[in-house]
Length: 536
Image 1 (spheres, rainbow, N blue to C red):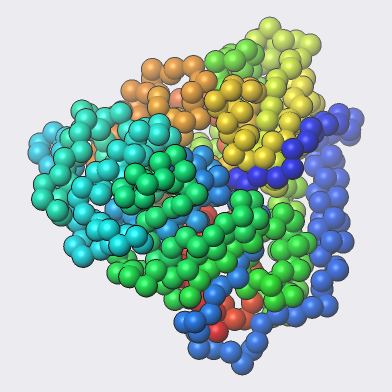
Image 2 (cartoon, rainbow, N blue to C red):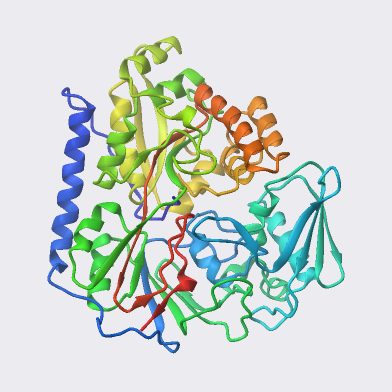
C-alpha cells in the first residue's frame, strides 16, 4: 500500500476524550463517513457507461483518474510505490510476475537460474528481437547498462552483486559475493525495468523527463502532478501478457474522492484507482459504475528512525505498539470493516503469513504506560512525526497520535507531500516516526531485505540490528517457500520483541470504472494493471 502526495500543512493533534480512545475513534469514523457522504451526494444523480457497448475499440484511448502521482518515470530515481503503475506501462521487466499471484514468469528473460553449488552465479537467457521505443535493440549489453544505471543511483541496493557480465547478445551472467535468493524479485521491479542506454546517454539526469523503455506503451507527454499521457508502442513484442489493447492511456491527477467520482460520472474518466475505501459505498450506488476491492499484500505502517532519541529505546517502541487499537484505527480510517490488523509483513492467507505474530501487541494502554515508566518516562515523552499528506496515511497519523496521547506519547505529525515526505524522513532525518505504506512483495527475501535489511532505503537512520541482519542474510540463502517461512518466523520474533517498525493494517485496493471498460485484472501488488485495460 504505497502513498501519494497531497497538501503541505501542519496537523494539529487533539487530546483524547476522557471517555477513552474507542469513543474517539468512533467519532472520527462518523466524521469521515459524513464528509465522504456529503461530498459524494453532489454526483449521485449522474450515470456513466453505455450498456450496449461491448467490443473493445483499438483506436480509443483510456481516460484514467487517480490521486497517485509518480515521483519519477526513471525506475531507478523515484522513491514512491505509486511509481510502479506508471513504470509498468513504459518498461518491460526482465522477470515478469502474474498480477494475481505475483509468481515469477518470463519477461525479457525467457529463463534464469542460480548456477553452481554455491549459487553465486545467476544467469539469464534473453528474448531476441525486442527493441526499445527509440528503435535500439534490447540485448545483453543494454540489460547490463540498465542495471548499472539503477545500481549507480543508490535507490536500489544489492551489495552482493559483484559483476554483471555479457555473454553474446542474449545471455547475462550476474556474479554474487553472497547468496541472494531474492534476486529474481529485484529483477521483476525497478532493477529489472530495462531502460534504453541510448536515451540514458542522450538525456543523462533528465532521463526521467524523457523515459524510453520497451514496454507496451511509450511516453507522450506530462505535466508533473497534473497529467501523464502514453501511446501504444507499435513495435511492441509481448514479453508476457498483455499486448497493448488501447491506442493510449491518459492519466489525470485528481486530488479528492469527490473529483474522482465527478470524473467517472461526467465521462471525463473511464477508470479510477487509488480511491479511498470510505468513498466506495457511495460510488457503488451510482448507476453504470462498478467498484472492485482487490486484496493486496501491502499494509499501512509507522516506520521508525531507531537511531533517534527517545525511539532508540525498545521499551518506548513497544509502548507505542501496545498503545494502538489497530482494528479501531482501520475501521475509522477506512470507514468500513475492510481493514485487517497488521502484525508483521504478510496478511492472513499469504504464503509467508506467520500466525504466531497474530495479536503480537494486544491493545493494552496500561502496559504501554508501564513500559514508558520503565524506560524512564513516567510523565510521558515527545516524539517527532511526519505523515504522507494523503489518506489513509494522514488519517492514520491523526488516529495513531490520539491513541498514543492517551498513554503519554505526544506526537504532532506534520503532513508532507509523498515523495518529499520520504526524502525529509530518510535523507534529512526530519522526524522519529513516519506514517506511510509498504507495498509488500511476494518474494520474502526481497521483502524483508527492502524493508528491514541493512541496506534498506528506509533504515538509513535506523540503529544496526546484528540479529536481524544475520537472519535476513540467512533468508537470502534459502530457495524454497518452506525453508524461507522458517526463517521468516525467526525474523518476526525479533520484530515482535524489539518493535523495529509499527505495522497498522492491511486494506483493499479500490478501483472504479464505467461500463465502457474491459480487462480489469486484480493485482496482489496493489498497483493496477492499466496495460490490460480496453474501452468499447
